[in-house]
Image (cartoon, rainbow, N blue to C red):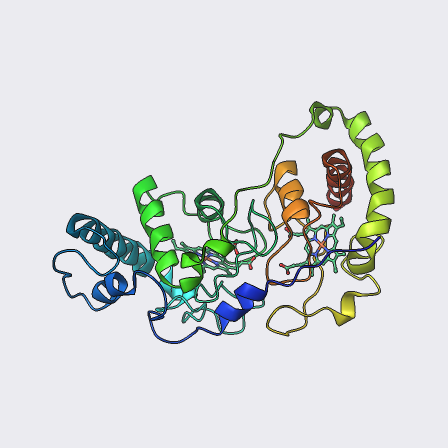
Amino acid sequence: MALRIVPPISLRQFSRVRSGFVHSAFVGSLVLCALAFGKPATGGDATGRSESSVTATRELFRRGRFVFEKNCVPCHGKYGEGDGELVKGWQVLPRNFRLATFKYRSTPYGKLPTDDDLKRTIRRGISGSAMPSFSQLRDDEVDAVIAYIKFLSPAWNDDRLHAQPIDLPPRPAWFDDPARVRQSAEAGQQLFQQSCAACHGEKGAGDGFAAAQLKDNLDKPIKPADLRKPLRSGPNPEDAYRTIMTGINGTPMPGFESTLRPAQAWQLVAFLTTLQAAQP
Ligand code: HEC
Ligand code: HEC
């Protein structure tokens, strides 16, 4: 099978824009400068925004920064670069929000996540990593911190990096019937050998023949996930389905939306369920 692995070129370009709070070459920079340095913007600005929308943006920025400084800085770092004081020696480092490479999305490979994707991550946390679940934050606090994360990279101002979520159907009814899950898992196993085992290994342990050569978009070696462990994507069949179809940005894990039919993806999910159930 030919794998279509689309390099996230535009994300890479943006990943070079690392220093400085604001990148001058994007629309709205005046507003953001005013925000970053705390100077009130007077009247409308060069982008034609009205004073009230500038004030509203500044207020959102302030509230978002407050939530971020209170809850996220020890890990994600003062400037959101993933280098907080707690993280020395960690295997799974916090995300660097300056690079705007997000893993757990409902959008196609290479695209930015939706607000709902970010909300899900913040509310649920990420299994197998230090990313906690923030159930105690109010909805408006989560919204504000999401807005703040978007101030941290100019990638968010690039229309080409935004996309609608892919079609994500609910799990088929047969997931409630263990006999039928087993049956689908057998079909899923065949598909897994064809499309996934090269990286993930025949039994999903992350030890396929191609595994040792894999690199991420920063050219660091990366291992395929051990699919016998709880998925970082989330605990539900829908979470595995979403990751299989959309892939994981910044890594060689491709999105299979254009190569797998939904029915096939569910069979693969059934197979993953049996791998996890087999663990003690
Ligand atoms: C105790 C450390 C810790 C704290 C506190 C923390 N995070 Fe994280 N966060 C992580 C780690 C580690 C990862 C990377 C997990 C991975 O790669 O699987 C992460 C990843 C993320 C991601 C990336 C999701 C994706 O799709 O790639 C988002 C968004 C995020 N954190 C938001 C937040 C926000 C917002 C806060 C504060 C409200 C916060 N985090 C607080 C450790 C932390
Ligand atoms: C080119 C190599 C490659 C192929 C082919 C591949 N994967 Fe992956 N996959 C990876 C890598 C690398 C990761 C880990 C990414 C990371 O560290 O965030 C991963 C992660 C995953 C995850 C997320 C695990 C988690 O904890 O949430 C799932 C699910 C997954 N792969 C399923 C599949 C399935 C099913 C197939 C076949 C349809 C497949 N992969 C094909 C390389 C690959």
